[in-house]
Image (cartoon, rainbow, N blue to C red; front, side, top):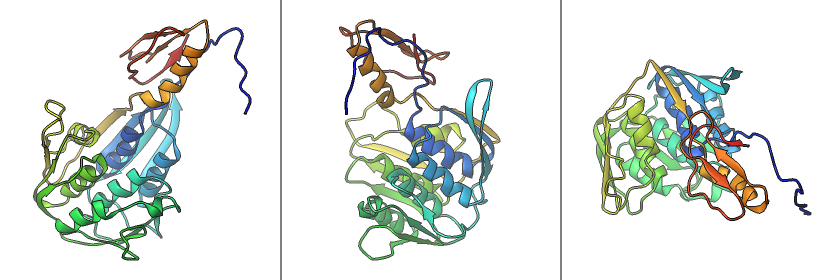
Length: 291
């Protein structure tokens, strides 16, 4: 690979991709909510598209379009019990987030399903979700008995309970909490430290009866709980800019002599002048612009 430095610096505008974790969850939560959910800043990565395709296969209408404010995703939710049996396997591609989170939702459905993935995902451990979900009444197993994909999820009778995890994992916690939406009683997850709390914050915004998931005291055990059911008549999700994605452009600014501004557009959370002698600690928002 040959890289040539731009002599005259860089000028122009970019849209920094949205956050992957929020993008995944916007599709999932919008699909099982009542009514429509409008998503902006959706990250169209292969992993997030795997999530989108799985829910489309279960009867969810997901519209992709562009309007005066830019690209959007419109999800016409089916409600907690409105998903339909997919015609064939649900292919999670290379996405562990898709596999683990959707398992919690599928554990509460009235139909059977089979999850598959590519060769890389098929080597990733799934016992960390199958074991706690099974303890809550789910009928979920590794088809080959090795704790790996494919996963077979049959109709089960979920009940609430308390799960104490050995490690702090947002994916494991989310799978358990999502199953709790279909369980009788309260479902509680206790972690040794608080993992990322996208699920708690977003479920609360969607109308779920959920507690916990704050960063007030992340060094001690954190407890999150959810009760059965939730609904929303209309929701809007603005996926914040991914700081990971933005860092590529920040690094580029550090390499050129002219420097440039990076901001989050109309909803400015952080504005930074990027030059070879400056650094940026965080970038959040919905739009990234280089001037």
